[in-house]
Amino acid sequence: MSWTEVVIEIAQGHAEALSDALMEAGALSVSVEDADEGTDQEKPLFGEPGMEPKEAAWEHSRVVALTDVDADQAAIVAEAAAAIGLAAAPAFTVRDVSDQDWVRLTQSQFAPIHIGKNIWVVPSWHEAPDPSAIILELDPGLAFGTGSHPTTRLCMEWLEAHPAPGKTVLDYGCGSGILAMVAKKMGAGDVAGVDIDPQAIESANDNAARNQCEIDFYLPNDFAVSAKAQHASGRFDIVVANILSSPLKVMAPMLAGRVAPNGSLILSGVLARQAEEVAEAYAPYIKLGVWAEQDGWVALHGQLGSDTVSPARGQ
Image (tube, rainbow, N blue to C red; front, side, top):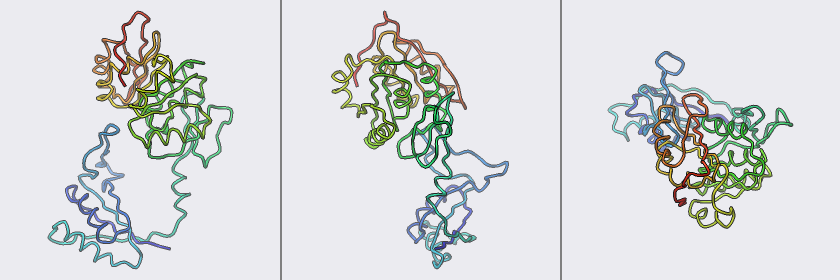
């Protein structure tokens, strides 16, 4: 089977509305690209995870709509343009799209990722490059955390550099469960993960089972109820949280309160320019410093002194 792509270059203000209208008019799928890609005018379009730009379009956008090869592309474009109030249908070009093995094409975009000295994140359809390494079988999915983002890599590298055989570990904001699994693979004892997204908890449980890692994953309310029974005092030798700077600051008393005496706290999801303000939020409880930086992101680390008074733990 073959398809035809309709390619329209349009101003940023119309790109998102036109995309929706093209779908309503009969397009099978629509994407928006930077029309200046590959030139000196190309611009990145991203923000912190969870804080992406409200409008997924560029100043000079290219809208690409996939249609059936037998569809009336001119009619689809005209209907979409009228629906969003354009005075005239925009000019467009078409290009043929031949049938492909879309599963294999998608899989080819995800290769094993080497992290730190001896960690490999390997999609299920790949062979592990080094079977003697620490292997995490993890497919790209809906939960954040495959090792490709600098914040995840920084936390994984810290865990590898500070193995804690038999120690307890809490991964707060666990996403896919990748950090909890690294800790477990490095020999940790009891490991727990917490996330606000039920889908992340499901994904993390699936990933842990696939990687033969015994880890307890919780939603926050369940964790507050279960942590003491499952994890003694509810404090952990290592607490790692890869979230974002704003929630990390709000959660300072709670996260610091989860750290056992002489335990370590590792935070990421923090841009280098935000490191000082995040450290200030934790200063009443634990002194944090930048452990490492990668691509403008940092990992903060601190150790709770045995004589430090911990705040209330909450959730």
